[in-house]
Amino acid sequence: MKTQSAVRIQSLFPVLLASLVVLGTAQLVFDGLKSRRSYVFQFYGKPEKARKSVFVLPEDRMDGSCNLFEGQWVWDNVSYPLYEEDSCPYLVKQTTCLKNGRPDPFYQKWRWQPHACNLPRFDPLKLLDILRDKRLMFIGDSVQRSQFESMVCLVQSVIPEGKKSLERVPPRKIFKAKEYNATIEYYWAPFIVESISDHATNHTVLKRLVSLDSISKHGKSWEGVDVLVFESYVWWMYRPQINATYGSMEDAQEYNVTTAYRIAMETWANWLESAINPRRQKVFFMSMSPTHLWSWEWKPGSHGNCFNESYPIQGSYWGTGSNLDIMEIMHEVLQDLKINVTFFNITQLSEYRKDAHTTVFGERRGKLLTKEQRADPMNFADCIHWCLPGVPDTWNEILYAYLLQGYQNFL
Figure (tube, rainbow, N blue to C red):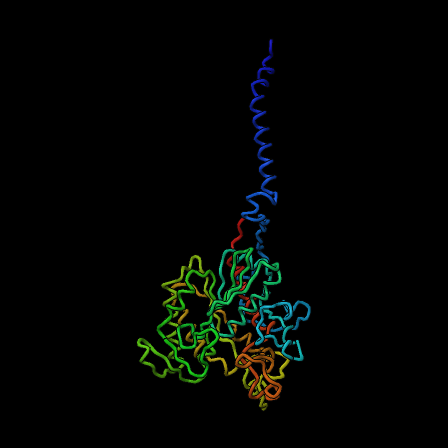
């Protein structure tokens, strides 16, 4: 007579046998999927290892009460530059000053030190994780293009070959980090609003005509972008007046630059309020990138410009190239906005850097300067654009600090 235990074992036997068959079949299926001869492997390719998300610690973030724009430049030839000129294939000739013959690399070795706190150390992996499945876009003129190139150079070294690309789709440049499904982009719009200078490469410099109330053509490319960084200044400052239209394109007239700038920025502000979703999009506006056209401003009695300068200005300084009226207009426009826009006041910290411009070690009209032109810095030195690595890297370090601040860890 069978015991109760024997009866239980006998009744469970078919279930155990069926389970072993299912497990064995599953193992064969998984082994087959891993095989390079399997249909799934051939169709989809080998699945990539899931990259661990980066965890942002409290000490990674800046002190929320700290003003990152007040501080001083300190010499740091240990941790700077954050990347080497030769290590970044995405730099244009306009900014590669050492490659173009500049004899001193000192401009690369200064670190911005805020008075009341420290800038978080730039971590490209953390930034890429923040940008996972997102788009970061820089919008403006060639100064803003330098900030775009700086950001690409800051992150590209940690991305394997084959997992990154740069595409030109005028008026945009698009850098893709494929593993992160992230893009860092640049959009050429020197006035932010529309103008006859909006072609990415064939834009008129001397003759300028700005449509002060037109932005929708540009705006279509900005809609839905997760992080927007705007800048517009130098192109407005060619003369005290600027040709512009308001309404009909046939009705062009001369406006005072400050009047035209205010109208254009109000057009931009209206677009923001109608097109931006503040719950999922972040908007930044960069203040003026200063020029250093006259050395008498920091060295009384001299008659040069930024050429042959190797050290930052010490002490308080504000050059005439930075227009306080424009600064006040931006302050008022942003104050009246119904959505939050972070104002990046990089003007003062950049004012000290008379040493960091491309001077004669850059391009003019798409060509490197000739030997004869380099010998005439008074007429040919570029005291508007910046060498890279250089000052725009600091702008991006500050941008990184703000993006870290708003990042939420997900466990």
